[in-house]
Length: 333
Ligand code: SAM
Image 1 (cartoon, rainbow, N blue to C red):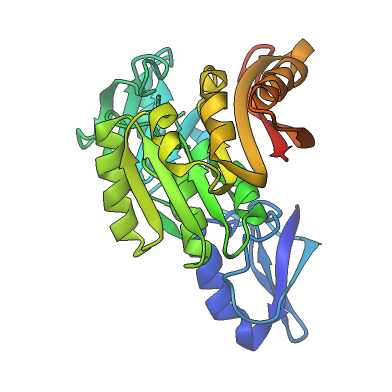
Image 2: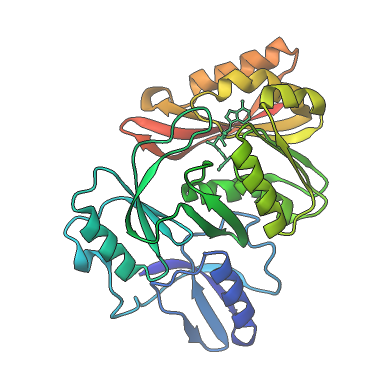
């Protein structure tokens, strides 16, 4: 199987292998091999620009064919239909509509040996704080865990504050755009996965992390400590009110509140220093992925007497049939 991989001198390979493992970028289903003086480390994905900056030493990102690890138990060996599930730390989350949840949970725990708990979500994320409720299907009865992502560790309580591992690549794309000396306003920071990852990139980056959910901010503060970062200001409050205190300071404004980020566009524009980028997330239909949302941003900028320049648009993931989670990036001049 063809994989993106890292090619590194054998004698320099081990620390890089460990870093990749820590960053959850090493593809454990493929067999590491050596050729001449070089070691080839298979990756789960081609790392977005900037993601590997923290890894010291010389290496090259390339592509190669890898052998699959033989004899490894797969879910397909145990289940006819593999339902969608996600893994947060040592918790696996399945949908409430999964048939034979006990059998599915047992299979997941057998194949993913680090999973200790299987939860079924009782519904979609809802309410102002975007949280869900769960029932335990197997393992320890808890909704708390430690999740690792790109070298950061997050304490998570799935029932008290929003978190999804599915935005990991998206977060690293934003990370790549933030430069030393810049200020980032994370208007809907949750437990801090954008804020902390960005803060960890350099102590010269200032991060203002706001969330209205008191539980999310408590956990965010815990995560700031857990990751030993000192450049995140955790603020409990309404982003539209808190933005008043930080007028024109931000070089990047992250608006990860799909569905109603538009209500906060005036506040976001206020946060923007000249030339700042707004990273605006939305859920949009396939026949109008970006246009209507872009118009909302342009209108808000124009209300504040500012001009806009479209920097980029992308589909982040599919959200529901014919609906997509998108990101629109606009420079506010
Ligand atoms: N950015 C985080 C992440 O990627 O995990 C959290 C995103 S979650 C979709 C949206 C967050 O916005 C929730 O944590 C919610 O509590 C917060 N929120 C909702 N309304 C808010 C408001 N008016 N001001 C600040 N935060 C708000």
